[in-house]
Amino acid sequence: MAENKLNDGMYVIGGLFIAIAALMFISPMSLMEDDWVTLPLIGLPILGSLLLMGFSSAVPAWKKESISETIKYASLGISLIVLTITSLMMTDLLINVHWANISFNQYMYEVEYNWIESIGAEWHVGIDGLSMPMVWLTALLVPVTIITTWNEKKAWYYHPLLILMGGCLMGVFVALDFFMFYVFWELTLVPMFFLILNWGGKERKYAAQKFFIYTFSASILMLLGIITLYLLQDPSTANSSITGRSFDMHEMIKNAQQEVILGNIWLGAGTQKLLFVLFMAGFLVKLPVVPFHTWLPDAHVQAPTGGSMLLAGVMLKMGGYGMFRIPISMFPHAVVEFQMLLMIIGMISLFYGAWVCLGQTNLKRMVAYSSVSHMGIILLGIASLQPLGFAGAIFMMFAHGLISPMLFGVAGAFKHHYHTLEIGSMRGMAKHSPWLAGNMMYSWMASLGLPLLAGFVAEVAVLVALWFEFGWWVIIPGITLAITAAYYLWSMQRTIFEGGEKTELPESLGDEKPKDIYLTEKIGLMTLAILIVIFGIFPFIFFEMMSGYSSELIENILLDEITGRWS
Image (cartoon, rainbow, N blue to C red; front, side, top):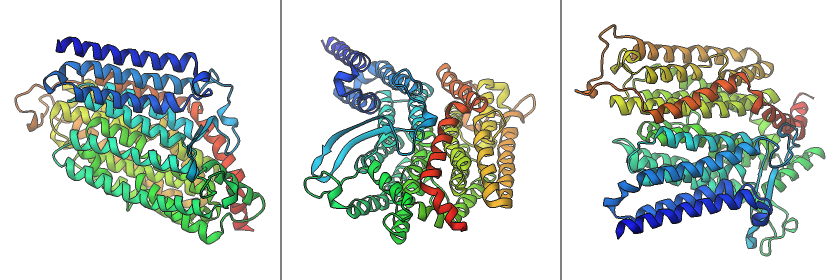
């Protein structure tokens, strides 16, 4: 009897998924006025994950293992639907769009609905040349993460949490209303907190709490900035029935642009600087950069493989995305005033992260500090105030979003198959686990910026822009890249190639025989490896839209401030 009820429940879930997919593809116009964002990209993964977790909770504990495979395939199916839609969005198959030619503050797939009318909060979404790469990256990494970590324990909760994370991240990248933006910004903390807390290592409680406290506390400063912006608006410009104000991000950017055209400083110089600091505080902690980075190594070391892949691949990019979307687009005077400070913080993060990597023995901790170093490159691209630097920074966000999940996927596989993360504990991996060794070597080469791989394109763009703006300061990033090569090559030599014919196996392996990675791990890692080389050889797939966005941003917002500095 219980078996029949269980089967009936799964048939209902399957029917719901089919119905949702059919409604989205057959008649989106009749559903939500041709809205390809709200239901397909945000609603489907969030509602689907809640449905799957609710069903799993209703199943008796002794039955949960039997529904594990079904939950996995359902989660993968939802994520693949989202990936298919975002891939179609990149082309002109849904609407006629050329992403590189979009004007500043213009958005495709833009829709707007009343949400909390009394305070002027709206459900306002849209996609441009900045958000499209992040939307597609998020849609890609969720199914790749699901496949790579297919054998994770308690899959009936774990995999739905991954698609919940994807839906919340989508909300951040498409939001054009400050209220909506902040809601989804905070919602991303919830699934990641539980991923670390329930599937993490021995110190998972400490790491989960530190992750939540750091990132939530920083976002409180951002909230203060949002409230300040809200209250500074002219009450007569919005349709709110109570306050006369709105949280419309699109409208505020438009106001800032109009003031630039008139030769004025929107909200005043002092206010811009204050708001710039409030917003940047939240974004710098999320990115993160030195000295706000200490939560990241602990979170990565303790997080499960899937959590680390999404944390490094997409969640950190929320910080860089937020910088471009809000303070750089709204506060041009403050951006120019704080240019040198941004450059110094970027330099310190870049060099410090690489230098600390030299002393790490834990594989995940080394990769975590390498992420801090690479986030410094993003900040240097921003500090250059050059279109090429901006485009390079955005492409670094994208490239690192492919490379870092592969790095953590490899680290997780090493932990799973050899029961350790100590770099020197294994010698001669290539002989016992050639697939794992090959993926490890490839991902490390990609991370250090090997030509024809995605990271190289971003690094060159940022370094060229840095040279144009700061001259010989570019030597410091050049030295840092050499340090990056040193710690990766040193780790590669000790782990993959040393050990001679007999090799040395880690003590943690005990009497077990060394194994190579599973088929699902091969599929996930090879997918990332192929994309890394594709975007390294053909970067224009996304780089053109990034360059178009960057040029429009400089021309419409920053150019007068930059030129005025030298007049």
